[in-house]
Amino acid sequence: MANAFTLSIVAPDRSVVDTEVVSVIAPGAEGYFGILHGHLPLAAALRPGLLEYEDAQGQRHTVAVSGGFAEINGSKMTVLADAAERGSEIDQARAEHALENARKALRGERSGVTAEDAREELERAMNRLRAAKL
Image (cartoon, rainbow, N blue to C red):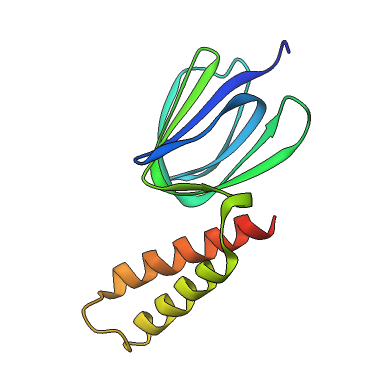
């Protein structure tokens, strides 16, 4: 396809996505940004959020990422994520359990967890649930 490019999403433990896409919306550190074929070279920090892409067949997909970096160069976008899961792979019960644990930590019910760590845990769990439901 003339306006397609390659998207590769890599987490520390595995390759999550490696496919041809026509568009990507990513959670940048300064806000969400979009990428289409022919985008100028770019390196961007990512924050926890949902990365959405449309494949060459017109299907939309969602990946929950927990931060990392994205590089766009030529006809390829590479995402090096701290953690990443396809929406279709997420165990909703496990994500809901993590969300409840994060809420308990924010209420001070779990000792040894800082408020900042609890907020990050809460954001990751909420993103995973959103990705699973899309």
